[in-house]
Length: 237
View 1: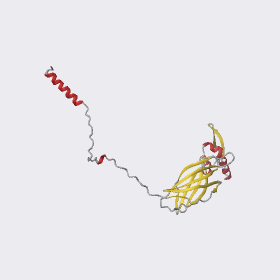
View 2: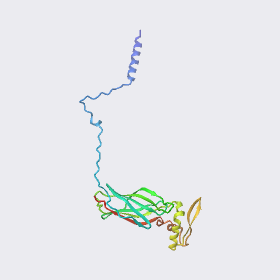
View 3: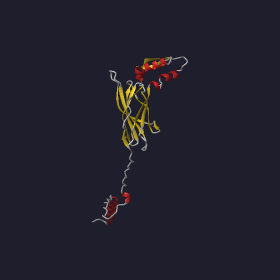
């Protein structure tokens, strides 16, 4: 038989084990008539229903236009809510990366000059002399109550910022010709610089600084073709 001291020690050990054992609590299910606390219910989001905006396609668009040797036409124009879109296609003067440089939209007495562009397609000139063509979608923001019975999209200019290799292959001849026609005594040449053909200013008047000569040679006018090309259509409902 266990002694009294042994019984006391055994009781203490059992009590310690009972205190250290994990307690598992089984959640009780709510009774049928028991209400779930409101804070436990996730609020359902109310969908936002946007105000209805007009949608329309242009009834008619003015004809193709050829300005500065570049043919431009609008394939289609339409309105979707707050935006007016126009798919504009134009011939490419050469193999450079030409894009729309400036554009505007006019309706009533309002002129919008902020726009976005998205490339639709681009086709380079062919070896047999057929010009290339690029198509862009122009996007303008208009208020929903705008009077679009007469809308004019104007392309102010197209431009191409040349790559380094383009200066010698494409731009130097026309830059030199323009300088000669204006009587500006600047001469250009293409030289090999670190294995790449690079256009350089090889001669200039003594009274002209290098910076002044570079401003003339690298002027934006050699990389832009001015319009305007203007197209009028009707988007009235």
